[in-house]
Image 1 (cartoon, helix red, strand yellow):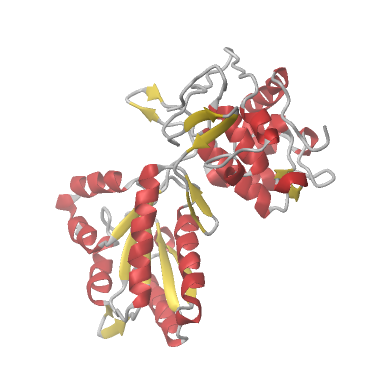
Image 2 (cartoon, one colour; image 1 turned 120 degrees about the horizontal axis):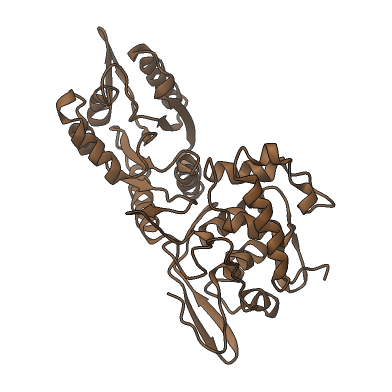
Length: 383
């Protein structure tokens, strides 16, 4: 938790805003510049008309603040793999384990497919997490391992013949001397029975073989990634399998063939036993910074800082809004609908309330955006 003292009045929202404007590497685990400290240490603001669930450190990051020689030092566990950045300890452990599994698999001549699962709410970035790990390893191994990515949604399959066609595509990638990373999205959906697709993956996961009628297909070396659609965590999937034990779904056999999993946390506020937990504003800030950088909306300034070109009030609303309808996908959609003005996202850049309402509560968003003006302004290059 954050340690409060007289020398540094630190709020979690201030830290998150600093990450958006300057990047986590200039805010966490480093000696901050004067301009970053001005953002982090400015007087806090709380408006009782809305539940901010606090400007106290929540479940999305373990932060500590220390003051040494009048300098503020914020320490937090941060894991960076390629474009993937996380501050969630559970996610870090899963990602490190899966990365080690994938690295070992790429390093050795193992023909049996490697099977892993990834869980999270729709739009939370499940495929992004696994692809970031895979691309980081591809860069590490160089020419020794060339990857290709295939994606199939089992909810769109009519019958097992569609799955057979997908397996043939995997075979074709192997013939091109590429290691296929195959995403089976919504693998936990129902077919003719509860979790009916699971039984068709048992042989491919165990022996690397798939039988269709009298034809036996050898899959070859592949990484099979099963992305949950109905369940948002591995523990939830286990419970679903337990409830389906009598349906012939072979859920326990499927789980026994998995070699690892990743739980991707939500960017929305969680409710546990009817109690609202703190909003993961640090996680939101890292995602928002990454999206802005990907859009080319960061600019280098004196002192080596790369400042994001976005209005502070818009940032405040995006960090503190109660809910994103489609998780990270909604945050990305809002930014993509903005019209940039001189390389920046301003209040006037935002889409109409009708479009904004597709992804957030538009009235709440604008309310939060305009009440942000009551706070001490963030330092910006133009000021």
